[in-house]
Image (cartoon, rainbow, N blue to C red; front, side, top):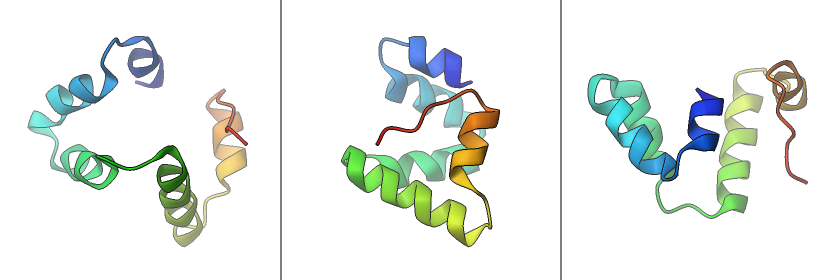
Length: 68
């Protein structure tokens, strides 16, 4: 999914199309819409922390590099 989004011309539009049948994805879109990159990073970090997930380790497993 990450590859698909990274190659899309309009990733937000693609997410909205995908969310039509997925209420969880629809909620994520509502939460992230209009957020700055810094706000998104803080949201993801807080969510990972509350779930006991090491964000750096997760990104590494997915082959992603977190921006500094």
